[in-house]
Structure formats: C-alpha cells, structure tokens
Length: 378
Image (cartoon, rainbow, N blue to C red; front, side, top):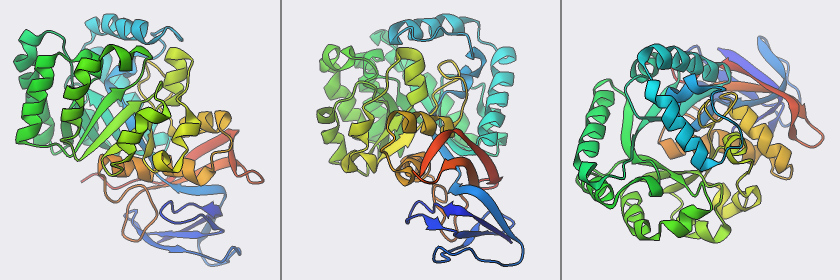
C-alpha cells in the first residue's frame, strides 16, 4: 500500500483536499482518499510531494498515426492548407515511417501522465501499438469521402477496420471526419450502419473554420441525424463556435462533449476557441481536452494544453481545468474507473509541480510526473 500526499489532492468528483492523502494498492486501485481537515498528517510510509495530486490525464483527441509528421507542416498555414499538406505528406506513408514514430509518441504520452486516449485512425498501422500499450485507447475509424459513387466501398472498408480492432479486444467505433468531407451518399450509408447498431461513442471535427457553418447547411440535417444516434458524441476543436451554436448540444448534456485542442488550434490557425464561453457552467461540465497530432503540435501533453488555457484564461479555476483534463474525458469515452480518485477506481496518479499556490494556477514551470500508472493492461 502507498500513501501519497501533497499540498492539495484533487479527487475531481469532490472538492480539492488540502494535505489530503490518496491510498493506492499494488494494482493501482484507490483504496481510500483521506481528508485530513487541512492539517499535515504524519504516518509511516507517507510519501509527501510538493505540488498537487490529480488523476491520470485523458487525451480525448489524438491522431497517433500522424506522429511521423512532427515538424513537417508549416505553422499558421490555415486549415485548408494544413489539410492539403497532410494529404500530400501521407502519400508516402509506410509501416517503416509510421509505426516507429507512433510507438515513440505512445511512450511520450505515458511519460506525460496520459492514461486514456481517443484516437483517430485511417489505417491499421497503430493497432499493435495500442494493443500492447499501458495506455487505454478508444479508436475512431475515420470516415470521409466526397465521391458519392464510392460511399458503399468506403463504408465497407471502415467496417472491416472496425472488426479488426474489435477482434483484437479493443474499444472501437466508426466516426465521420467532418461535415465538409462527407458526401450525401456517405452520410446515408453511415446512418444505415448506425441504425442497425447504434454506437456508444463517436467523434467529429466540429466548427474548425469560419465557413463550416455557412457553407454546409444542406449537410447539417444529415450530420445531426447521424450524431443523434450515438450514446455520446465528441465535438472536436470548436475553434469558431459561438455561444448560440452550442446551446442545442448543451440541452442534451449526457450526449455531447466539447473537445478543445488549444495548442493545435494555435499551431494551425493562430486562434483559440472562445474559452470564456466554454467556461460557462452549461458548457464547462462537458468540456474535454485533446492534443491532436504531432503534425499540428510540438508535444503530446495534456498538461501543456492546460498551461496554454491558463495563460489565456487565468480566471478559470484550477479544479475546473483538472476536471476537463481527467473525468470529463473519461466520461466522454465511456471509460469507467478513470478520471477521479474514488474507492475501487484505477485512474493513475499524477503529480503536478510548479504551482502558484497564492493564485492556485499553473505556471510556465509546471511539470507532470506520473506516480502511479492507470489500469493495468489486461
């Protein structure tokens, strides 16, 4: 048994505890969380750390298979040029280039205290990496194509990929890429597949550009029809989302989650989502964090995403930011046992140092050290 303590413990599902103690057994399971009443407690084998203790991070949006494109794409090129650059760069994809970089990225996320990931896949290169990782993955097999004549072919290929992940014992679903990248016929095929077997969780790149809302109104109905069939849907990026755009989603809080990837947004478009809007109570309860890929980011670190948010929205309470990085992502992906310090759960334990305790904020010097890994690989 380990007894872990710090200046503050953030159980997430309950308020932070000053000088709290997290009791963890050898399997990483939370046995108890002790409220010391804000007074330091002395006991044998107590491990005290300078900083705060939080559950393992959840990266709700990543593209592990793009890890070989680190430093390959120009910054601030805009969304259209970024997508074109990715398309050109991927024409030479091979197992020799993709797999080693993806494996290194998986290890990087583990070092950065990430215990669960919602990952986008367009091929099978990362299956074995995910199956053997200490990180838990849900894989979204991404569906896109504007040639309506190929809709059935594209859907069948995605279903075959889904089956391979499923047979490997992994959590997986087929998900649309974006409203602008799917033909009407492909939306119809996706709707048919969802009707026969409604998915538990899907994702979609959402309102990443200013023209996305105005230019694709005809597809809006088809998109809404598909998204509404899933138990949960991750709306990713939301870079140009306005308050009025989000109210319809917020009216069904158990279904829709907003995934923010601030460093990727800055990399591609030098723009952040409206953080003040997402900090409002009706939206904040379902906000998650993601890193996106190394094609649009310099590292895969949820802490660095948190630091970026605190830099631009210092008024956001630290306990809210921690919740975005942990429990909300776990809830979105449907991963029980992660995201909070509760008895019987195995969420991992991260130490965050470099805290400004006077303001209760992260600083430029804040760093993460995993003390306990997440759920052991079965």
